[in-house]
Length: 85
Image (cartoon, rainbow, N blue to C red; front, side, top):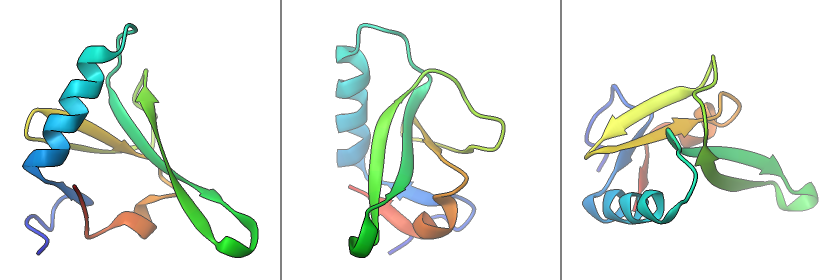
């Protein structure tokens, strides 16, 4: 169930721990991870996840459980109400 309607996505404890581990392992400083989408021809869309070095002007920022997830503005409407696990 979606826990907080004021956030575009909800983050489980498991996902937060995994993100924290990834952030610790990265050698370059990052402000969080960024989720986006990419068009995949006839297959529709696929999601992208990468380290974010800065917060974009129009990025949706979700901070929860000690992690920061940025959502590309083009991906927000496809991710509203989802849960990262």
